[in-house]
Length: 141
Image (tube, rainbow, N blue to C red):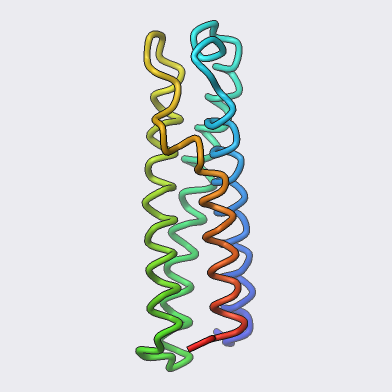
């Protein structure tokens, strides 16, 4: 496949993945004990959880596959900026896993709404994306 097509597909997959993560992160951080207990947001939570399983998670997998393909086809090797980018992507992948777990658990009555650090997950997603875009475009080292 042409390298430019790989880049385009990779950017599209990353956009879907990060967009889905951001929706989940904002929703989870916005919930408090009262809204989680009254059952009102459970329909929204189920919809976002379904979206995460069917769209966001596969987009993350596709982003990883296409990204690694780009690394090998582009001959990027062991560039320091790339190692840093991959570390940030690993952290975002772990955060995605934690958000997906929280989406599955939140609708259950009596369960605490959000762990302390997940309240800051929207900021973490945005900071991660800023770091990745900066590393890819500027290649500072």
